[in-house]
Amino acid sequence: QVRLVESGGGLVQAGGSLRLSCAVSISFHSINAMGWYRQAPGKQREPVAVMISGGSTNYDDSVKGRFTISRDNFKNMVYLQMNSLKPEDTAVYYCNADQYYSGEYLNYWGQGTQVTVSS
Image (cartoon, rainbow, N blue to C red; front, side):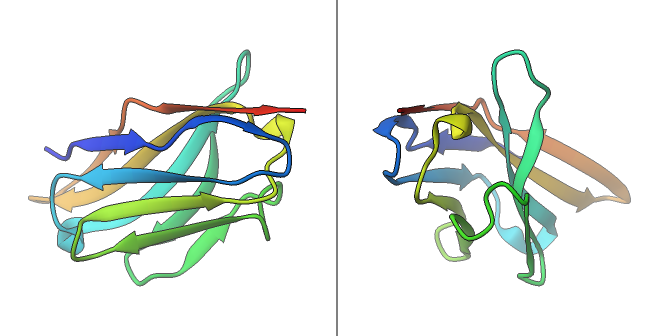
């Protein structure tokens, strides 16, 4: 079982920055990928940024050049640095983990953290 706890959300003006943090309850050895997703009101949850185990990253086109996903292997933390925020970035942001464990692929979600960007 992997537990994910997000923090760092809040209210920010357009053009501002926030850094989201995700505390992961286990080391990254058995985790294939970590990601950040978001869900705006009335919309489906969508991927924002993903980092696979080798360290390569992928970003949604809407956040490329503004958001950066990173991790700290010693602290078992994953971060999402969000710069130049726009009102359309307003959503609940979720941390996600894909794990390969005992022959199974498992997927975990955090509880989410609200990000609100005012214009």
